[in-house]
Length: 112
Length: 115
Image (cartoon, rainbow over all chains, first blue to last red; front, side, top):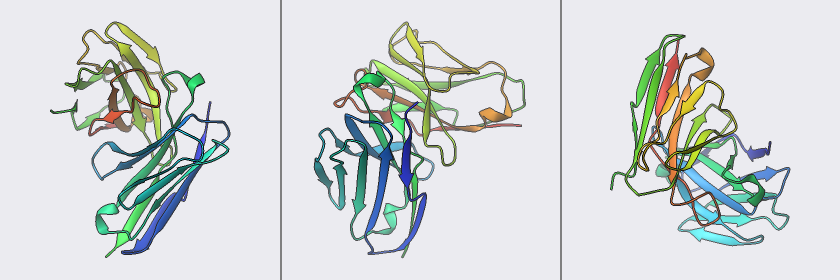
């Protein structure tokens, strides 16, 4: 099946630093999604991207849908302690029907 | 609105025991699904349903059964638990079938340990 490689697997940063994570795929997606999972909770949607090249922001978060449609990145600016959690990318392609493919997650830890 | 509600939040089973993880949503969503989350592997789709009376297999369906008798409920059954089924299970729903416009709303998860 489709595979999503998400990197890095974990990051330990100082409060105030910027963060960047990305996902790459061996196949094309029509939609890229970025979710955040707080400890003990389910993933919550942060940003949805629907078009190649699209750049979308949500507060301090910015995500881009890669031109090749095989990658996406998420940036977090000026990190704060509540940014701690696991960030997942997910991709959907029309041919996959009702299947979303998830990346392995990036665990973010922020040192105050 | 409660959104997607999962019970129990934690469960310990012995190998061979059976149990049902419950999932209910109050958003009148047609699409419901079950994922399992294992370290470093993201979320993998177990089973899904596009409406009452309709279910289909996902990426890792073996060892799990589902049914969808109502729009609101989508229980996941383990008939004979195995240690490989130790995981965190998430139920998720969507207004319609998965597409760019219909995104998933997740429950808080059920952590299952099989000894």
